[in-house]
Amino acid sequence: MVEAKSDELSVSEGVMQAKDYAQKLQLETTYSTNGNEIYQICMKTGEEGLVNDFLTPQQLWNKTLSDQNEWREKFANVPFENRGGSWQPRYYQEIAVQKAIEAIAQGKDRILLTLATGTGKTAIAFQIT
Image 1: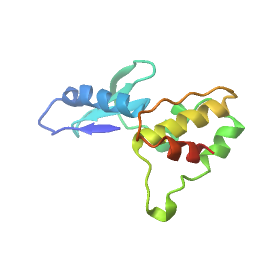
Image 2: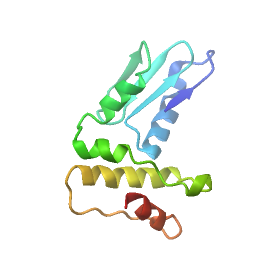
Image 3: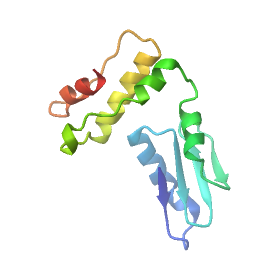
């Protein structure tokens, strides 16, 4: 997630907003930039500071999913069912599916997803299945 601000503002202007979005979306890495400087935040370790470049997609993948195993790769290759393009999962549904699949890939035999009425638990269960 990148929070971009005007080049007339300090790079720090977007840091709290970037952290807030990253927390809501359960992202490990987020950025604030003003076009002149890049401020990187690792939500997992709390490490943050100015960097020269954004991480590449491959670097982000390796950083976020460093605990690789055979099942994670297999699960990652299964696309979301979208009913021929007529349905798209909500961001929190994607997170729920991803967290459940991660638990399965790690060999956990008990998984609990708790969501409110009307939030798409059936759609989430379908995606996991």
